[in-house]
Amino acid sequence: ENVSTKQLVVGKSDESSDYIGFSVSSDTVSVAVLVYRNGKLTDKKNYFLGETYDSREMRFDFLMRYYENNDIPSKIYIDDEIIDVELISEYLTSKRGKKVVILIPKQGEKLKLVTLSKANASEYLALKSGRTAKELSALEELGEALGLNKPPKLIESYDISNFGADGIVAG
Image (cartoon, rainbow, N blue to C red; front, side):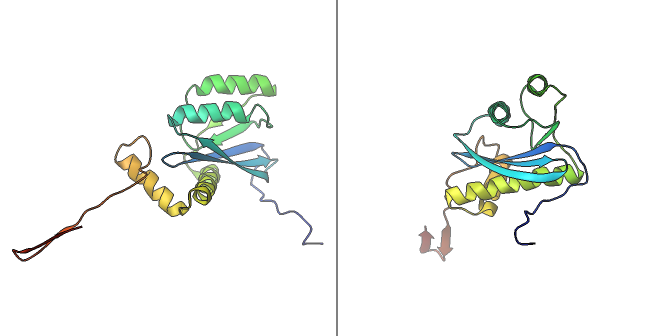
């Protein structure tokens, strides 16, 4: 009997909400959506978006396409800023018939769930790219620290060693 029951993760709230996280590599984007209905995790979805571009536009475009064919919850939690948040909120509100709010959580349980969705997106991307999620995360952080639009594809390093006056070695 226990084997046949479906496992559900129960939240503290009875709200219906989606938690959306993005993971970006140098040439593709992965998105993970955790779907909560009445405080229970009812579905997990993963998508690839193809080529990368402005992250705020990318999030806007994804939300517009995703909610064309999926149930629209009252709250959508997303991992980063999007363009025209008011416009998309109004559009989704009119499509749903009830108010829809798009939020970026800064702390607490909601932030943990968005972070989990982002980790799921990273894992899914890692499966496709053949790299570990830890490597992809490190490349994302390095790209941000260097002010790059995308994480680096390739990192080259050179070592020039001196073994006395005559023993210069490079490689």
